[in-house]
Image (tube, rainbow, N blue to C red; front, side, top):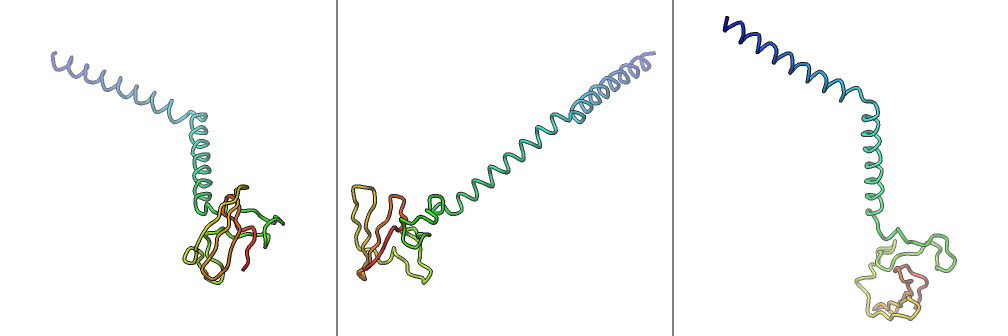
Length: 127
C-alpha cells in the first residue's frame, strides 16, 4: 500500500511538471507579437551598427565639401591626406598660421602652402 501511495505521488508530480513545461512552451513559442518585436529590434540594431561602422571607417569624409566653388578643385583634400602622387604633407610641414575667421595657412619646406578651412579641408594652395 505504501508503494502505491509513493508511486501515485511521483506520478502526480510528473504530470504537474509536464503541464507547467507545456504551458511555458505554448506561451513562449506561439506569441507572434513577441517574435516580430525581437526581429524588428535585431534589424534596427544591425542597421545602427552598419551606419556606425561606415561613419567610423573614414572620419575625414564626414564634413568634406563636395562641388563647392569656394574650394579649389571642387573636391578638396583634407590637410592630412596623402596626395594622389604620393606626397605626404605631414612630412614637409614647417609652420601654421591661424586666421581670425577660423581658416589657417600651412607652410611646407619646399615653399608650397595651403589655406585650410576650420575642418582641415584645403580651400586653396600655391607657392
